[in-house]
Each structure stands twice: as structure tokens, then as C-alpha cells.
Length: 331
Image 1: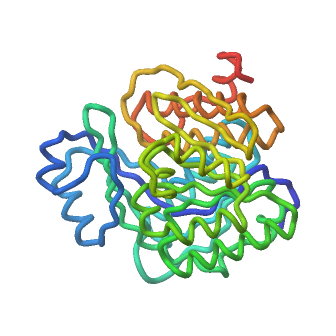
Image 2: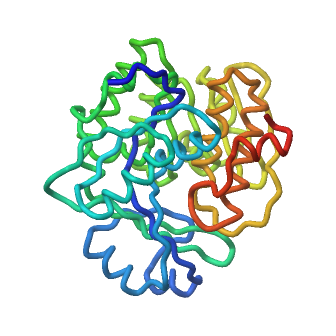
């Protein structure tokens, strides 16, 4: 057991991503809604994979991508997520540990295979995700490393993992430990369809345990069931929490109670693949937050990281984000 302090501990789906370029006709052929994430079973994943073009395999998962970004910034990080003791499970564990991330979750020895996400990237950079959750949904409260949670300044939860009951209980256990230790809890809403499924329980979690909420425009509109961003912004301010709202090319708005919202412009870049944009934004923001930087600087770090990841294929940074931020004068 180590006693080293962690800046951020992520808890989420441990997934290996398979990215492939495609076109709108392929999405239409398979009845896929561009820009969405759907859950599929193993048979559907295999059938879709067989019809896809050449793919690139990279370790992924929303919270794991954020942790990878934080590690690139130089933050001390850990991750909790379930994989099976199969080939893809070994790939995931190797990749995240190679980044210097503390990863100790026991491998599953039976049951479903390691999770994978088939990501179809259209010419406009939009990604459509088809996720077989596999072993990742087997996360249980027993997998929560209590020592890691206590050592983490922020425990970052991935909304996607709110679907299975056992993983939900793992989240509840982790938030209880974090709050008892005087640490912060952050939540990413992950996807508007995920919010549709769990709106009431997300609101309950936000109001009870969450200190920092990350949501894009579609997710916050879904959470409050309103038609305009201004209405959603007003509802978010009323929560009296730190809420970070991303709006793609419109930048982000950061609210904290009745304080004047902080608005940060997006960094201009050529869009190749939007996979991981929200994940990397959260990485940049949390890196700044755990260092006590002003909220506008946190937002600029998030925008910088998001711009870097959408400039290439794949959900994780291809440059050292700490050096990148220094070159651009943000750090």
C-alpha cells in the first residue's frame, strides 16, 4: 500500500476503443444516430465490427481517458475499473500503468470479456459509439480501494457507469468515503441519453454528494428538461455547486452559485475526431482545479486539452499536455 497523495482518482468503465473512419451512409445502414452512444451486446458488437473498415485499437473509457489526460499534465492519478484477464484486459492495464497511473483493480477471472467501444468517425469529425460493456459492468463495491479514495483530492465519477446497480453501489460507497475524508467528488454526465435514463438519481446524487459537475449542452438541457441553454444555466446556478458546461465551438461556461458565470472561449483547431473532447476538457480543468488555479485558467486548460485531442484520431493526447500548455502560455 502506498501513502502517496493523488490529485484525482477516476472510477469508470475500463474499455478498449476501436476507432474507424466511415460515412453517413454506413450509419444509416446500421440505424445509428450520429454523435450518440448506444449499448450493444456481444453479438451485435461482433457483427458491427465485421462490417467496419480498418480500425485502430486504443485503451479508452471516458473516465480513464480523463485520467490519461491528467497524467499528461503531470497530475498524480489513480483509476478503478474492471477488466477480465484476457488479451484486451492486459492491453488496458498495461496502457494505463504505462502512463504512471495507479491501477490495482483485480482482474475478473470469469464472465464477460473485457469491454470494447466501436467508434465510427464521420468526415465531419463526429463520433458515433457502440459500446459492449462486458467485464466493466462487473465493478462492485468490493472493488473500491478505500485507501485510494481517501488519498485522492478529487474522486471523478463517470456517468456511463451509473447503469448497472452493482456499479452504482460502488459509486455510492466511493462518494461516502471521499466525503468522510473531506475530499471532493466530481461527476461527468457522460451522455444525454444516459441522463434521460437516470435523471432523478443524477439530480439526487448532484444535490447530495457532488461538488463538481461536468456536462455538455445537450446533457444539461436533458438534466433540467428545458429548451434553452439560458434556462439550463439558471437552473445550474441555483444548485450552488461548481458546474462546468461545455458548448463545443462556443467554449464553456463555469458557474458557482450566484457568482458571475466565467466564460472561456474554445481554442480554434482543425477537427479530425471529436472522440474524447469532453474527457480531455475535464482533465485540463481538474488539473488546474487541484492546483488552486483561477476558474478561467482551469477552463483554458480544459479548452487546450480538448482542442489537442480533436485534432487527431483517438481519445487521448498525443503530446505532453504540460509542455503544450506552457508553450501556449496557459501554465
